[in-house]
Length: 338
Ligand code: PEP
Ligand code: MN
Image (cartoon, rainbow, N blue to C red; front, side, top):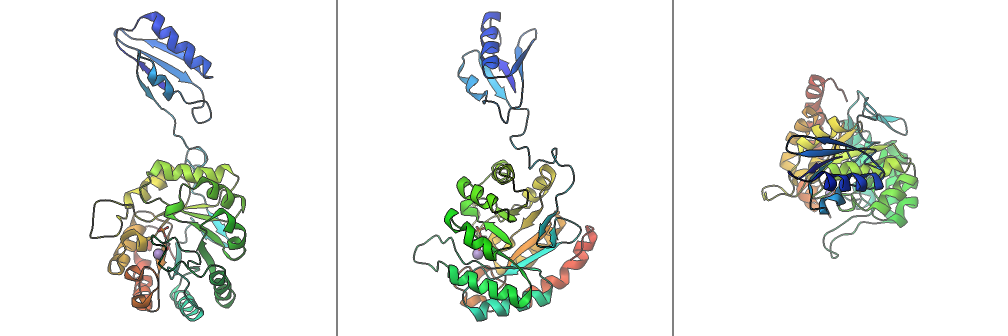
Protein backbone atom coordinates (compact mmCIF):
# COMPACT_ATOMS: atom_id res chain seq x y z
CA UNK A 1 0.00 0.00 0.00
CA UNK A 2 1.02 3.57 -0.50
CA UNK A 3 0.15 6.08 2.18
CA UNK A 4 0.13 9.64 0.96
CA UNK A 5 0.86 12.17 3.70
CA UNK A 6 -0.68 15.64 3.58
CA UNK A 7 1.64 18.47 2.43
CA UNK A 8 3.58 20.31 5.12
CA UNK A 9 3.33 17.52 7.68
CA UNK A 10 6.10 17.53 10.29
CA UNK A 11 8.66 14.72 10.38
CA UNK A 12 7.35 13.71 13.79
CA UNK A 13 3.84 13.18 12.40
CA UNK A 14 5.28 11.11 9.52
CA UNK A 15 7.10 8.98 12.11
CA UNK A 16 3.75 8.42 13.81
CA UNK A 17 2.34 6.96 10.55
CA UNK A 18 5.45 4.78 10.11
CA UNK A 19 4.98 3.39 13.62
CA UNK A 20 1.34 2.52 12.88
CA UNK A 21 2.27 0.84 9.58
CA UNK A 22 4.86 -1.31 11.37
CA UNK A 23 2.41 -2.16 14.13
CA UNK A 24 0.12 -3.61 11.45
CA UNK A 25 2.90 -5.93 10.28
CA UNK A 26 4.31 -4.10 7.26
CA UNK A 27 7.76 -2.73 6.54
CA UNK A 28 7.50 1.03 6.14
CA UNK A 29 9.66 2.87 3.57
CA UNK A 30 9.11 6.62 3.66
CA UNK A 31 9.97 8.71 0.61
CA UNK A 32 10.42 12.37 1.50
CA UNK A 33 9.67 14.71 -1.41
CA UNK A 34 10.12 18.49 -1.53
CA UNK A 35 6.52 19.17 -0.66
CA UNK A 36 4.99 15.85 0.09
CA UNK A 37 5.89 12.53 1.64
CA UNK A 38 4.62 9.08 0.86
CA UNK A 39 5.11 5.93 2.91
CA UNK A 40 5.33 2.65 1.02
CA UNK A 41 4.07 -0.24 3.13
CA UNK A 42 5.71 -3.51 2.08
CA UNK A 43 3.85 -6.73 2.82
CA UNK A 44 1.06 -8.90 1.47
CA UNK A 45 -2.02 -6.68 1.53
CA UNK A 46 -4.38 -9.57 1.00
CA UNK A 47 -3.52 -11.34 4.21
CA UNK A 48 -2.20 -8.56 6.46
CA UNK A 49 -4.47 -6.33 8.40
CA UNK A 50 -5.77 -3.60 6.12
CA UNK A 51 -4.08 -0.25 6.27
CA UNK A 52 -7.14 1.60 5.07
CA UNK A 53 -7.97 2.44 8.67
CA UNK A 54 -4.97 4.83 8.60
CA UNK A 55 -7.25 7.21 6.71
CA UNK A 56 -8.49 8.33 10.12
CA UNK A 57 -5.14 9.96 10.96
CA UNK A 58 -5.35 13.70 10.22
CA UNK A 59 -1.92 13.75 8.53
CA UNK A 60 -2.94 11.00 6.04
CA UNK A 61 -4.33 12.21 2.75
CA UNK A 62 -4.93 8.90 1.01
CA UNK A 63 -4.22 5.18 1.32
CA UNK A 64 -3.84 3.36 -1.99
CA UNK A 65 -3.77 -0.35 -2.71
CA UNK A 66 -1.15 -1.60 -5.12
CA UNK A 67 -2.13 -5.27 -5.06
CA UNK A 68 -5.32 -6.90 -6.29
CA UNK A 69 -7.47 -8.35 -3.52
CA UNK A 70 -7.75 -11.73 -5.20
CA UNK A 71 -4.88 -14.11 -5.58
CA UNK A 72 -5.87 -17.64 -6.63
CA UNK A 73 -8.31 -16.50 -9.34
CA UNK A 74 -5.87 -14.01 -10.81
CA UNK A 75 -3.98 -14.56 -14.03
CA UNK A 76 -0.79 -13.61 -12.25
CA UNK A 77 -1.03 -16.75 -10.14
CA UNK A 78 -1.92 -18.93 -13.16
CA UNK A 79 -0.98 -17.37 -16.52
CA UNK A 80 -2.57 -20.09 -18.69
CA UNK A 81 -6.31 -20.53 -19.12
CA UNK A 82 -7.75 -23.03 -16.67
CA UNK A 83 -9.62 -25.93 -18.16
CA UNK A 84 -12.37 -27.29 -15.93
CA UNK A 85 -13.25 -30.91 -16.47
CA UNK A 86 -16.91 -31.80 -16.01
CA UNK A 87 -16.83 -35.56 -15.83
CA UNK A 88 -14.74 -35.74 -19.01
CA UNK A 89 -16.12 -32.66 -20.80
CA UNK A 90 -13.54 -29.89 -20.85
CA UNK A 91 -14.61 -26.28 -20.41
CA UNK A 92 -12.19 -23.48 -21.15
CA UNK A 93 -10.09 -25.26 -23.79
CA UNK A 94 -10.36 -25.08 -27.58
CA UNK A 95 -13.87 -26.49 -27.56
CA UNK A 96 -16.71 -24.09 -26.86
CA UNK A 97 -19.30 -25.35 -24.35
CA UNK A 98 -23.03 -25.30 -24.89
CA UNK A 99 -25.29 -25.69 -21.86
CA UNK A 100 -28.99 -25.52 -22.61
CA UNK A 101 -32.35 -26.50 -21.21
CA UNK A 102 -35.40 -25.07 -19.52
CA UNK A 103 -35.33 -22.39 -16.88
CA UNK A 104 -37.22 -24.78 -14.55
CA UNK A 105 -37.77 -28.49 -14.59
CA UNK A 106 -41.56 -28.65 -14.90
CA UNK A 107 -42.41 -32.28 -15.68
CA UNK A 108 -40.89 -35.37 -17.26
CA UNK A 109 -42.18 -34.77 -20.76
CA UNK A 110 -41.01 -31.16 -20.89
CA UNK A 111 -37.55 -32.04 -19.59
CA UNK A 112 -36.98 -35.11 -21.75
CA UNK A 113 -38.21 -33.45 -24.92
CA UNK A 114 -35.87 -30.54 -24.27
CA UNK A 115 -32.95 -32.78 -23.34
CA UNK A 116 -33.25 -34.73 -26.60
CA UNK A 117 -33.70 -31.55 -28.66
CA UNK A 118 -30.67 -29.73 -27.25
CA UNK A 119 -28.54 -32.86 -27.48
CA UNK A 120 -29.49 -33.34 -31.12
CA UNK A 121 -28.58 -29.74 -31.84
CA UNK A 122 -25.14 -30.21 -30.25
CA UNK A 123 -25.33 -29.21 -26.58
CA UNK A 124 -23.40 -31.37 -24.12
CA UNK A 125 -24.75 -30.07 -20.82
CA UNK A 126 -28.41 -29.88 -19.81
CA UNK A 127 -29.59 -27.04 -17.59
CA UNK A 128 -32.79 -27.02 -15.55
CA UNK A 129 -33.70 -25.56 -12.18
CA UNK A 130 -35.14 -27.90 -9.55
CA UNK A 131 -34.86 -25.22 -6.86
CA UNK A 132 -35.86 -21.81 -8.19
CA UNK A 133 -35.05 -18.44 -6.62
CA UNK A 134 -38.26 -16.51 -7.34
CA UNK A 135 -38.88 -12.89 -6.47
CA UNK A 136 -42.42 -13.63 -5.29
CA UNK A 137 -43.26 -16.46 -2.89
CA UNK A 138 -46.45 -17.05 -4.91
CA UNK A 139 -44.58 -17.96 -8.10
CA UNK A 140 -43.51 -21.49 -9.09
CA UNK A 141 -40.69 -22.48 -6.74
CA UNK A 142 -39.46 -25.54 -8.64
CA UNK A 143 -40.10 -29.24 -8.07
CA UNK A 144 -37.24 -29.65 -5.59
CA UNK A 145 -36.20 -33.29 -5.10
CA UNK A 146 -38.65 -34.48 -7.76
CA UNK A 147 -36.94 -32.08 -10.19
CA UNK A 148 -33.57 -33.60 -9.34
CA UNK A 149 -35.00 -37.07 -9.93
CA UNK A 150 -36.17 -35.98 -13.39
CA UNK A 151 -32.76 -34.48 -14.16
CA UNK A 152 -31.23 -37.85 -13.26
CA UNK A 153 -33.66 -39.57 -15.63
CA UNK A 154 -32.68 -37.15 -18.42
CA UNK A 155 -29.00 -37.70 -17.68
CA UNK A 156 -29.37 -41.49 -17.78
CA UNK A 157 -31.39 -41.34 -20.98
CA UNK A 158 -29.25 -38.89 -22.95
CA UNK A 159 -25.79 -38.96 -21.40
CA UNK A 160 -25.91 -35.17 -21.09
CA UNK A 161 -24.16 -33.69 -18.06
CA UNK A 162 -26.35 -31.73 -15.66
CA UNK A 163 -26.10 -28.18 -14.36
CA UNK A 164 -28.65 -27.14 -11.75
CA UNK A 165 -28.91 -24.45 -9.11
CA UNK A 166 -28.28 -25.00 -5.43
CA UNK A 167 -30.09 -22.43 -3.34
CA UNK A 168 -29.04 -23.29 0.15
CA UNK A 169 -26.19 -24.82 2.14
CA UNK A 170 -28.43 -27.61 3.35
CA UNK A 171 -29.16 -28.74 -0.24
CA UNK A 172 -25.55 -28.97 -1.43
CA UNK A 173 -25.09 -32.63 -0.60
CA UNK A 174 -28.16 -34.00 -2.33
CA UNK A 175 -28.04 -31.60 -5.31
CA UNK A 176 -24.42 -32.69 -5.84
CA UNK A 177 -25.57 -36.31 -6.22
CA UNK A 178 -27.27 -35.46 -9.53
CA UNK A 179 -25.52 -32.28 -10.65
CA UNK A 180 -22.27 -32.39 -12.58
CA UNK A 181 -22.03 -28.61 -12.14
CA UNK A 182 -23.52 -26.73 -9.20
CA UNK A 183 -24.99 -23.40 -10.27
CA UNK A 184 -24.79 -20.60 -7.72
CA UNK A 185 -27.36 -18.01 -8.75
CA UNK A 186 -27.10 -14.26 -9.01
CA UNK A 187 -29.09 -13.79 -5.81
CA UNK A 188 -26.68 -16.00 -3.88
CA UNK A 189 -23.46 -14.89 -5.47
CA UNK A 190 -22.18 -13.41 -2.21
CA UNK A 191 -23.71 -15.98 0.12
CA UNK A 192 -20.29 -16.92 1.42
CA UNK A 193 -21.43 -19.85 3.58
CA UNK A 194 -23.10 -21.39 0.54
CA UNK A 195 -19.99 -20.78 -1.56
CA UNK A 196 -17.87 -22.54 1.06
CA UNK A 197 -20.21 -25.55 1.33
CA UNK A 198 -20.43 -25.83 -2.45
CA UNK A 199 -16.63 -25.58 -2.69
CA UNK A 200 -16.24 -28.45 -0.23
CA UNK A 201 -18.38 -30.73 -2.42
CA UNK A 202 -15.48 -30.72 -4.91
CA UNK A 203 -17.96 -30.36 -7.81
CA UNK A 204 -17.42 -27.83 -10.59
CA UNK A 205 -19.27 -24.64 -9.72
CA UNK A 206 -20.78 -22.11 -12.10
CA UNK A 207 -20.81 -18.82 -10.24
CA UNK A 208 -23.23 -16.24 -11.61
CA UNK A 209 -22.42 -12.58 -11.26
CA UNK A 210 -24.70 -10.88 -8.74
CA UNK A 211 -27.51 -8.54 -9.80
CA UNK A 212 -25.46 -5.48 -8.93
CA UNK A 213 -22.08 -7.00 -8.29
CA UNK A 214 -18.85 -5.38 -9.32
CA UNK A 215 -16.35 -7.46 -11.27
CA UNK A 216 -13.97 -7.30 -8.32
CA UNK A 217 -16.65 -8.64 -5.96
CA UNK A 218 -17.52 -11.42 -8.41
CA UNK A 219 -13.86 -12.45 -8.61
CA UNK A 220 -13.55 -12.31 -4.83
CA UNK A 221 -16.60 -14.58 -4.51
CA UNK A 222 -14.81 -17.02 -6.83
CA UNK A 223 -11.71 -16.60 -4.65
CA UNK A 224 -13.73 -18.02 -1.73
CA UNK A 225 -14.32 -21.22 -3.68
CA UNK A 226 -10.69 -21.57 -4.74
CA UNK A 227 -9.44 -20.74 -1.27
CA UNK A 228 -11.53 -23.64 0.07
CA UNK A 229 -9.63 -26.02 -2.19
CA UNK A 230 -11.92 -26.20 -5.22
CA UNK A 231 -10.32 -24.84 -8.41
CA UNK A 232 -13.21 -25.92 -10.67
CA UNK A 233 -14.98 -22.61 -11.06
CA UNK A 234 -16.78 -21.23 -14.10
CA UNK A 235 -17.55 -17.52 -13.98
CA UNK A 236 -20.92 -16.64 -15.49
CA UNK A 237 -21.92 -13.20 -16.71
CA UNK A 238 -25.74 -12.98 -16.69
CA UNK A 239 -26.45 -9.29 -16.91
CA UNK A 240 -26.55 -6.64 -14.23
CA UNK A 241 -29.31 -4.33 -13.16
CA UNK A 242 -29.16 -0.90 -14.74
CA UNK A 243 -31.62 1.93 -15.43
CA UNK A 244 -32.49 0.43 -18.83
CA UNK A 245 -36.06 -0.85 -19.24
CA UNK A 246 -35.93 -2.37 -22.75
CA UNK A 247 -34.13 -5.37 -21.30
CA UNK A 248 -34.57 -7.24 -18.01
CA UNK A 249 -30.85 -6.85 -17.28
CA UNK A 250 -27.95 -5.30 -19.15
CA UNK A 251 -25.69 -8.07 -20.42
CA UNK A 252 -22.23 -6.77 -19.62
CA UNK A 253 -20.01 -8.22 -22.33
CA UNK A 254 -17.16 -5.93 -21.29
CA UNK A 255 -17.10 -7.92 -18.05
CA UNK A 256 -16.39 -11.04 -20.11
CA UNK A 257 -13.29 -9.44 -21.63
CA UNK A 258 -12.18 -8.11 -18.24
CA UNK A 259 -12.78 -11.41 -16.44
CA UNK A 260 -10.73 -13.20 -19.12
CA UNK A 261 -7.94 -10.68 -18.71
CA UNK A 262 -7.95 -10.66 -14.91
CA UNK A 263 -8.54 -14.33 -14.32
CA UNK A 264 -7.58 -17.72 -15.74
CA UNK A 265 -11.03 -19.17 -15.04
CA UNK A 266 -13.40 -20.05 -17.90
CA UNK A 267 -16.16 -17.50 -18.51
CA UNK A 268 -19.67 -18.53 -19.52
CA UNK A 269 -22.36 -16.13 -20.76
CA UNK A 270 -26.07 -16.49 -19.95
CA UNK A 271 -27.85 -14.30 -22.52
CA UNK A 272 -31.29 -15.50 -21.36
CA UNK A 273 -31.20 -13.88 -17.91
CA UNK A 274 -28.82 -11.37 -19.49
CA UNK A 275 -31.51 -9.59 -21.48
CA UNK A 276 -34.78 -11.34 -20.62
CA UNK A 277 -35.89 -11.40 -24.27
CA UNK A 278 -36.02 -14.48 -26.47
CA UNK A 279 -35.74 -12.32 -29.60
CA UNK A 280 -32.26 -11.12 -28.58
CA UNK A 281 -30.73 -14.35 -27.36
CA UNK A 282 -29.15 -15.40 -30.65
CA UNK A 283 -27.54 -12.06 -31.38
CA UNK A 284 -26.14 -11.88 -27.84
CA UNK A 285 -24.68 -15.35 -28.26
CA UNK A 286 -22.72 -14.09 -31.27
CA UNK A 287 -21.47 -11.18 -29.21
CA UNK A 288 -20.46 -13.45 -26.35
CA UNK A 289 -18.42 -15.67 -28.66
CA UNK A 290 -16.71 -12.65 -30.19
CA UNK A 291 -15.88 -11.26 -26.73
CA UNK A 292 -14.02 -14.43 -25.80
CA UNK A 293 -16.54 -16.39 -23.74
CA UNK A 294 -15.80 -20.09 -23.24
CA UNK A 295 -19.40 -21.23 -23.32
CA UNK A 296 -23.06 -20.32 -23.22
CA UNK A 297 -25.89 -21.16 -20.83
CA UNK A 298 -29.19 -20.84 -22.66
CA UNK A 299 -32.81 -21.32 -21.66
CA UNK A 300 -34.71 -23.55 -24.10
CA UNK A 301 -38.33 -24.67 -23.71
CA UNK A 302 -40.63 -26.78 -25.92
CA UNK A 303 -43.33 -24.14 -25.64
CA UNK A 304 -42.04 -20.93 -24.02
CA UNK A 305 -45.54 -19.42 -23.93
CA UNK A 306 -46.53 -22.05 -21.38
CA UNK A 307 -43.36 -22.02 -19.27
CA UNK A 308 -43.78 -21.87 -15.49
CA UNK A 309 -40.88 -19.42 -15.20
CA UNK A 310 -39.06 -17.00 -17.49
CA UNK A 311 -41.20 -17.79 -20.56
CA UNK A 312 -40.40 -14.45 -22.18
CA UNK A 313 -36.70 -15.25 -22.50
CA UNK A 314 -36.71 -18.96 -23.38
CA UNK A 315 -36.08 -19.89 -26.99
CA UNK A 316 -37.93 -22.75 -28.70
CA UNK A 317 -36.28 -25.74 -30.36
CA UNK A 318 -36.29 -24.12 -33.80
CA UNK A 319 -34.55 -21.04 -32.63
CA UNK A 320 -31.99 -23.10 -30.70
CA UNK A 321 -31.28 -25.16 -33.83
CA UNK A 322 -30.73 -21.99 -35.83
CA UNK A 323 -28.38 -20.68 -33.17
CA UNK A 324 -26.35 -23.89 -33.25
CA UNK A 325 -26.07 -23.62 -37.02
CA UNK A 326 -24.97 -20.01 -37.09
CA UNK A 327 -22.35 -20.23 -34.31
CA UNK A 328 -19.61 -22.37 -35.99
CA UNK A 329 -18.32 -19.70 -38.41
CA UNK A 330 -18.19 -17.15 -35.61
CA UNK A 331 -16.42 -19.64 -33.38
CA UNK A 332 -13.97 -20.41 -36.17
CA UNK A 333 -13.17 -16.72 -36.55
CA UNK A 334 -12.01 -16.61 -32.92
CA UNK A 335 -10.16 -19.93 -33.07
CA UNK A 336 -12.77 -22.06 -31.33
CA UNK A 337 -15.06 -24.88 -32.30
CA UNK A 338 -18.09 -26.64 -30.90
C1 PEP B 1 -31.60 -19.19 -13.88
O1 PEP B 1 -30.55 -19.56 -14.44
O2 PEP B 1 -32.75 -19.59 -14.20
C2 PEP B 1 -31.49 -18.13 -12.84
C3 PEP B 1 -32.42 -17.99 -11.92
O3 PEP B 1 -30.38 -17.41 -12.99
P1 PEP B 1 -29.85 -16.08 -12.21
O4 PEP B 1 -29.39 -16.57 -10.87
O5 PEP B 1 -28.76 -15.61 -13.10
O6 PEP B 1 -31.01 -15.12 -12.12
MN1 MN C 1 -34.40 -18.45 -15.60
